[in-house]
Image 1 (cartoon, rainbow, N blue to C red):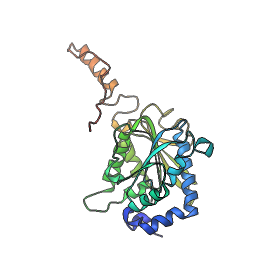
Image 2: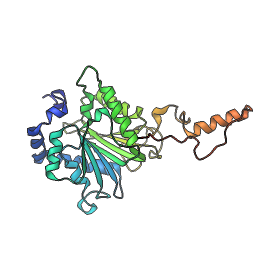
Image 3: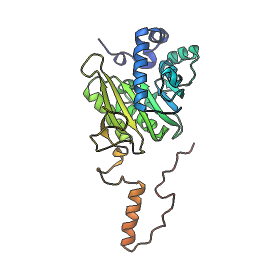
Image 4: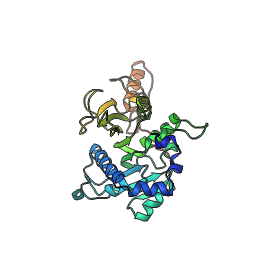
Length: 280
């Protein structure tokens, strides 16, 4: 049986008919609910947060994000913003009057929000679509790079993202994971029901803030079972135990070396090593 992403681009596959069928299927609703709750448990949120829903579709996950803690949503209700490439899916969400704000956008072209906007992000059954390119001028690696680079920028320091997806094979799983790591995320993979036809893969991502415990083969704090592939900032250069090039620690070390050589260097301040924000 062919995979949906191998047949048509998502904006064409999820037409009006497919979008309604997807949204009204009790089986899909149950699976979507289970995966959203699983993603929320991995986010480990303890208070209402601003969450980005990537590939929000008709708002099935968003409806759960809007629920209170008593209704089963940890830390909820959360405020959420969702975007999707399918106008038909978003049309169904508007008809349902979901509580989140909705945007029509292609994740493969980036994440169109200001840096540091969100506390957390989720994506359910969406990012495998980025592994296909619809034109000869694009590529899966380019689409993944733009998405994870934009996602990394849109999250506050210490923020987390959980992306559930269905990799076609181990090579695709590696391609997705490496794209996230290259963007700067600390990353880990969790496999539920591994080796069965119901297997589900969760890519757990962290933005700095020291969220990873132990060594590089340890687990993410509060997320037992997640195999850590890279600590935050690992893609920015340097081996474990070394300062990342361009970081505050690296700059201070270089200045000390220059001072020992008798060279004149600027005095340190609270701005030393601080990254400039993107201006809009």
